[in-house]
Image 1 (spheres, rainbow, N blue to C red):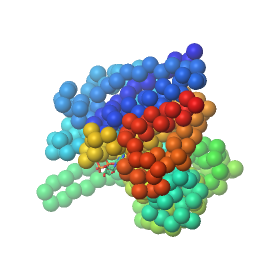
Image 2: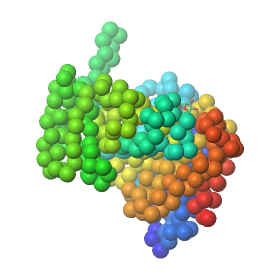
Image 3: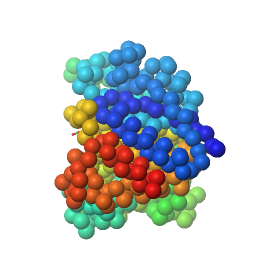
Image 4: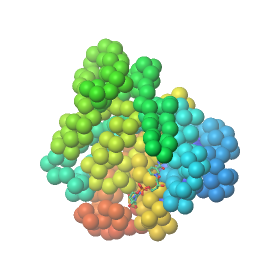
Length: 355
Ligand code: NAD
């Protein structure tokens, strides 16, 4: 029997509710698959500020690093928005990604057939969309120095080193090689020097992947093509800022933010979380959609535990549940047979795994 250690960070808002359902589903798969997961829980975000006075306490850092992977809910909320920057929940998450050396952020965007009507785009445009955004996560303008805000002036610095670009490009090409051998690198090389270097290094890396076809696109055009013809993309490779914006745009192609998972990996263990936030407006009401977190757990099984078989079981159980017409409130308007709670959604998906 294989044993895995999994750190659980519930976070704030709906974090706890959605994580409980992901654990339920992980347990249902493990019963059938000859492995056991030892869960250990730690505090992050606003709840850590309340309990420890900081968003990423030492106890959490030491605790999570003992594990094979981390599954997180979401952090943040109005209660902590006015705190000084270092104390805000988001600072805890940024610091955790930095400590993990998690420079590769992967966001798959796939449209479930049963939810085609959930997309604001026309059916013929989104049928068959299946792309992955590979976003650089620990560099670029969010981290670049110098940065400052004074009363009359504020600035940030977008900076990338050759090495930072090279390692994320390799991650992108490796992924593309295992998919449809097609990658689109998105930059703003007509205006930014940092993008000129990005393009140069991506082309150098491409020389080692002759089986993968590379194209370049300016970010403004990419934003347009994502809604005009999302099917034309397979793997999108891009920097931190552009990836942040494009992945939310691509996320809406699928209809609800409550459906999309992500992984952040690099030098250390992987961090898996839904792309959405802590949704304080619907916390503790039992109406949050747990599917993005359940699919994040599926990514975790595939990428960190190398159990693609188990990952596929979760994806097909989610697909079956949606085909049967079960919907949480956020997607209730699209071919719903029955509107279910967060907990019921988790139980139905777990039930399909055990069948
Ligand atoms: P959000 O993603 O939390 O919510 C946006 C909208 O989507 C809300 O109407 C919410 O109810 C809905 N929504 C989100 N997830 C849902 C789900 N699973 N099921 C059903 N509906 C869902 O974004 P926001 O409101 O801008 O931010 C709220 C807090 O989350 C802020 O403090 C923000 O900083 C934080 N945040 C955290 C992360 C993270 O933990 N990685 C990411 C983004 C935002």
